[in-house]
Image (cartoon, rainbow, N blue to C red; front, side, top):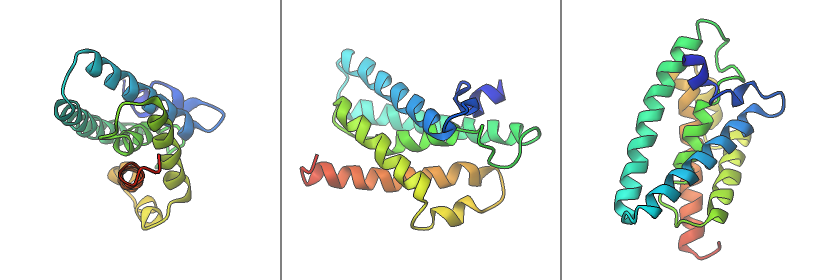
Length: 156
């Protein structure tokens, strides 16, 4: 079960860009989650609060799964993509519900996750189960800031 969680339902086993595949799964799940909540006519505050609770829950579950799979896989193995899922969810938090914004969020998150600017690389180089998750959380936070700035300034 922990391997399924850590690998993002198996997307981490992709031979082509497992981190990107995990991120794509993450953004699709987040979009579907928001689609369902919009169809239930929930208000924006409830949607955002529920999304934040889901992010925290999956973050904690993901760190626990990472700890378990580190017994079998190397530290920050390419098969571990639950961190990408959490990171892209953070980037997509509190956006208006338009599919284009989710595509932008995916792109912005992948930029920060791959380039690792602004201390992301330092966190990535740390040892421990939490470091696997925290570099993507930080990339997600930077992505969230960029997305909110783009939305606030009407660039997108």
